[in-house]
Amino acid sequence: MPDALELLATRRSSRVIDLIEPGPSAQELDTLLTIASRVPDHGKLAPWRFIVFEGEGRARAGAKLAEVLAAADPGVSEKRLEDERGRFLRAPVVVAVVSRAAPHVKIPEFEQLLSSAAACQNLLIAAAALGYGATWLSEWPTYDAEARTALGLDSFERITGFIYIGTATQKLEDRPRPDLAAVVTRF
Image 1 (cartoon, one colour):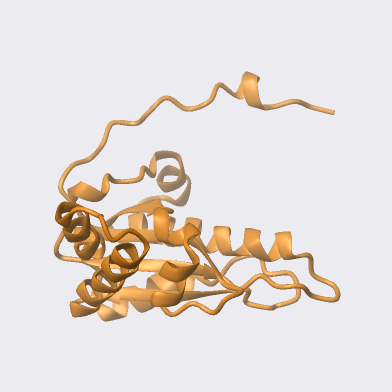
Image 2 (image 1 turned 90 degrees about the horizontal axis):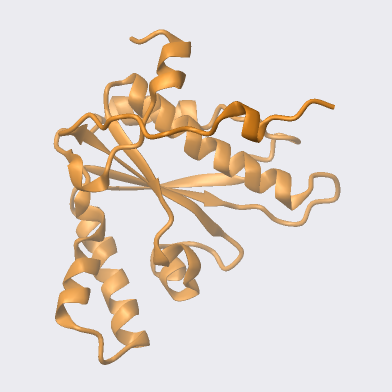
């Protein structure tokens, strides 16, 4: 297992087209989700949940998204519908991190949303630590109420991200990172 600082300094998102079988085993996935859950969570609200798309469930979810798209746009091309049917087949496992942020007497909704985003980042880091490639995408279902309903979300829930996980076929070169002088100020 890589040194924690080395892992954090070198972690890189994989391209979704480069993720193939095998994906994480059931036990590894439980480990990933346990680590994803270990995030700052003011008030211990667990203002997020996970939807795991694996096996045949990936195709069923894609079919539902294609139905939503066809209902919204009767003129949509068959190619686009086929792409939607295959959306979650692009990786062995896809995890939707769902924000359950809601009004609370003490905990601001924004803090709850940030906790959900931290769960996405923990999931990416944990996947890298286990040797898997992973990437965080939002994609159109994140912003479409009918798509969210088709994927089983309640009306108040939002998708923080889809985390695609699998075996990376390519190790990507690091991309340029911000110059600290351009993003750090001291007060």
